[in-house]
View (cartoon, rainbow, N blue to C red):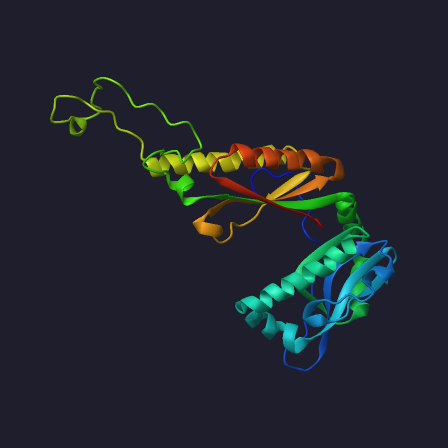
Length: 282
């Protein structure tokens, strides 16, 4: 958990027994674990590489799984696959889609992408051995959803400009009037008048943007059950830089006030664009 967090649930994980790649065999790919899932919720569902999704049931827990080829998802494939951006994105998207589908009808905890087991029997063992842990996680996320907030600052806002060094985030200070004392010998002018040393516009604007990002996160965190900072991603449209990327776990009753805060911030913070995505499975 990052700065300002209050213990958001981490995805459940198990120790995967990965078959070797290149043997032409198969393995069981685990997407997540749901509680009290109606089997009909998985009818027609497909996952990674278009593989059908089924449930492995142990008590009230259902593991969401597919059978995959170890040539595609075994150790060697997993070492080389992430270097293929399209492969990694397709796998992550399919993984999310399966979890999202189950989460529409039952509390569902995702596991890490590309978690493999030998067979369904081994998955059932994991459910039985770690049932209490899964139950605690599912209790934590029941009735809650995850929302992501990303904020972007335009180049002008980040660096300031000749007309407004603050990039529009703060009122521009009025220039001093009348003679000013020199701050050091080098600041004296050739006309017998001193001048104050002004802050660097770029650094000043950058600090203001950072403060706005921190303040936005703090305001949102006050309306969330938990939160977690995520790594900042590539620049947005027109060279805008991402200054905040965070996930927030919300109770159902917190959603309206949380969204109201994001709307108000988007209207108030000049030069900063805010994107909100959700709801998603926690």
